[in-house]
Image (cartoon, rainbow, N blue to C red; front, side, top):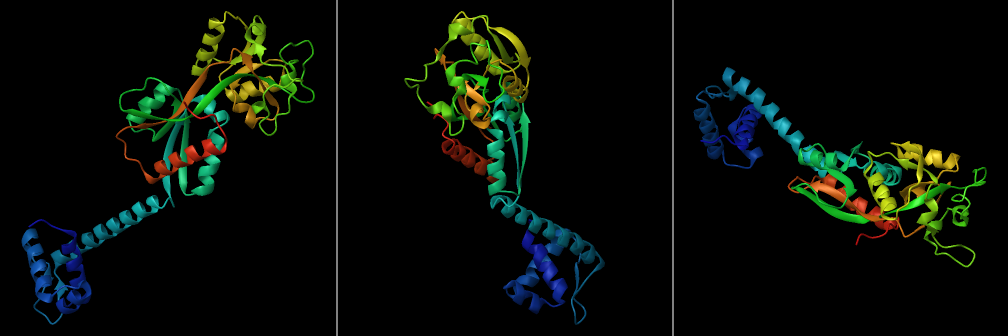
Length: 329
């Protein structure tokens, strides 16, 4: 006979009541059925668990040892069931997220704030790393989700488009920003107010059009270092248009780069959305425009999708729509 959970519950009910009749009533089964099930359990284990000789049914020594472990097993199973329900209703849980570096400058913060506001019991772990490491980590179950870019992906990785990320020339603005004798910072659009998405407005009669990329030839820039995939896109754009800026500063941190740009006449190239998060940064459109990329949410194709993973996925799509990021093609 295969041992089933009901056999444990039957034995413990008899032990608690010391009587087959009352135990059967609690279990909503007949007394003969209960007695038969206990005998099947004893035959399976090869030992007598109950002493039936007295007026009160009692556990034998073997029965006491078995009942002790049976109670522990049932407690653990009940706790496991509660944990499953807790996770499903998002009262608690864990999510492991990996992102490529530029997203920490404008996307990770709002996503974390939204997740914490809606589901404060969810523990979020964020790892900043390269896209190839994100995909490898998804396949080895190191991460639940990744945010990176569209393109060829490793077999077994599924990508869902989120929005279009546009790169743009960025400079510092505001009182005290050193603009003298600097053709980029003096470009009128750089002084355009940055509250309320200033960069979304088209040029007017008083506002010139985009800056020709040729004007950057031999100009000093501050750029992300070569270990960023974004730098490869930037270098490719300049090479395509035969422009050779002088790289005065290289930084392996978006935060460091934004600090440099806000405190010096240097311009940089960053995702346009970064300017939405920094009121002292402004976008200067280039002609022709810098290349756009499709931002994607990555996961392992055959991975179990926990309640936390599903909730974060829905939250991410909702936040992208709310913040007005350009839709993916």
